[in-house]
Image (cartoon, rainbow, N blue to C red):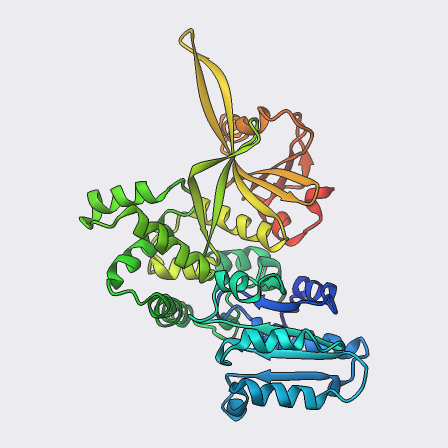
Length: 427
């Protein structure tokens, strides 16, 4: 897939530098580099164009890069693992490092044995992509058994999207929050065609992958659950509450275990991610409820026929995705506080939108679409004011503001500053 867009009468390319850096950091680490992510997010272009070009810029000779697009008809003979194995080994003729790039590896029978064999070639470094119903998230764990190193690729971040968008930051945001960052959209100008592309992608690709992989027979249950999850981004839920909702609102009887399985299927297809609840003071995880976020806003909105423009939750979902793209683990925080109401002591729980960890760094982040007045500000920051540790506390708001620290020591940022400057949270 070409990741290009027109800007000022020039052809621009979304560079995707964070993924190139991630792949370069893993060179020659003795593992199979497995590039994963939701289908059509640009994995193949990343590996075959951007990464290959970078290797050559670093001095790797082109004949030392062995690449196969295994979904290309002219490469059909290499779907036989013996043919592919023989061809790759025949191309390795000296002791310099060879880079093996294989796209859609799941099309090769018994590919895990083939790749494990490549690990025994001392001067070979292997990178693969895979997708569709035969190669989803959970397979990385089972098929490679500790010999695979996963590089997770997301649709375009807002910053990547902005770099090829012909317009202002505000115009880019207005487009991004509706249609998201699937790279295929960059070649589509019409809003109607963008909507049709995303809806077809969801129904004809993602949905059919799940149906095919798990041999689901009651498709309407999965369809309806997808709609419910898409409607409920940023809200706490669990399989039991979803079961009750199906019974009361949809008049459909789906067991809790079935819903839990369906949610896992959507996660394995990289369509959604789960954020668990974390007790900040007690320093432990709370089993349920949790939140689910869509990997891309365009896909989420397409699922709902672009009817639900709940911009606060959309902004929250975009922030979540940005944090995950930056390599952070992200939880939903909970702070329990003793309060007095009408002379009586009560325990109340306040939510921290995101508790983010990366190495020994931690950030507490609140997403605030609009801060109308001081009362609203106090409401949005109440949970942060009851966290007594020294980690940075951040309030991200939709309105344009210059970054500043308030009287509580909280860093206040505009959404666009947060999304376009990865270092701003550390300044």
